[in-house]
Length: 487
Ligand SMILES: NC(=O)C1=CN([C@@H]2O[C@H](COP(=O)(O)OP(=O)(O)OC[C@H]3O[C@@H](n4cnc5c(N)ncnc54)[C@H](OP(=O)(O)O)[C@@H]3O)[C@@H](O)[C@H]2O)[C@H](O)CC1
Ligand SMILES: [K+]
Image 1 (cartoon, rainbow, N blue to C red):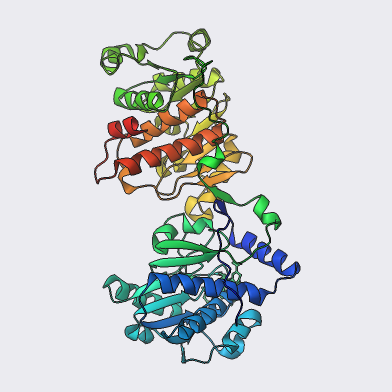
Image 2 (spheres, rainbow, N blue to C red):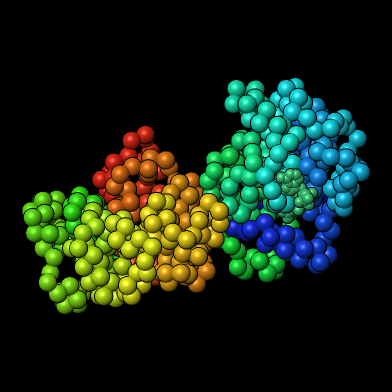
């Protein structure tokens, strides 16, 4: 057991499903690296992070019957070699272990006990190596009891928890909990993160996530088409050009915000589109709201809804439209959405649009970004169950079904394009759960569409800038107006 630890920088933005990760494993093994070598790198890399994160104490390593448990045995040995007091608690019999896990167990010569919740009572640190990528059903019985006992002890500050690959019970593809899971302070995963590390409730249960490079062959086919990517500027930055000397307001994109029953929402969308770099922003709103909206900012063009919207957008060289924020759901709203879609310009559809078209096919239009929150998503796509399929699969299916980019908002915002691309936003501050922030996002995405980004890239970039602005503002109470100004 003296292989070097191989933990350099790894693939930062790819998110692989458990199946894709297993395929990467197999590809690497087929190309000459043994499975046991991968396990040693995984376990030793995880142990190194555990030694960095926690002070030495009494460690209980809870090992499951598969390779996650195998990693646990490697971690146990490494920590013991570093002088830590380690006990292994095994679910099942040693004789039932197979392959690499059996080999790792054979190298363990320290204390070992049958898995039981009581063991948690005398531990300062739990290494949770029960189930990882091979979780197939809800965690029950002795494993569930141990995790529940550990969660209680951790909540009272008497136990630190390090999860191997994922907190046991969290599904790596969806972030959903099957049965039970214990919140970890640290989760060490391998090669790259999995969607479940970013999706709730998994993300919250992981604590800090560290990635260990275990030497997966970079030519592994799954790496060319990961299930999803982490939203980061690399996705759009070569297409989002800064203003140059040849630019004028129309080349920077004229954004049209269509207002309705609640003019505050259109005002927020307009403000954020301007801050996001739109060359020009016009708000068309019912006549009675014109003075109110116009009073907002002298640089905004405000007028009532034109009779012929198609003629208006071509005369004014509109590049992108936002419709939905504060729109209302009456006949007026319906006609306006239809007219906006008929312009066939890039468009952001938000808020009330999803009530208007609940469970129905959207009329044909230009390339669109739909920005529903969970409730709106359920109204628009009633046959897609997000909880059951997980956000990556659910939003991807929605995008394919409607033929447009869908941005499902939330603490784990998920963007999917009809061509199968999917991306997840990491670490959005909870302060974004405030009224008006969605209107700000809609305006930001519209400005990016107007600046020439394709819908998927505009949705990803909008979500990212929105999160960055919220992070910069910090604090506990975020005002949507401040957020728009901070973009
Ligand atoms: N490249 C890598 O990422 C590497 C990962 N490694 C580690 O390997 C695991 C995945 O190992 P695998 O053996 O495929 O799966 P698990 O160990 O997670 O679990 C499989 C066993 O657990 C049983 N199981 C599953 N769910 C339950 C449950 N709810 N209750 C009880 N038992 C459960 C399952 O039983 P079956 O009857 O379903 O077969 C299996 O016995 C990965 O997560 C990493 O930690 C490698 O070390 C190196 C490379
Ligand atoms: K685990």
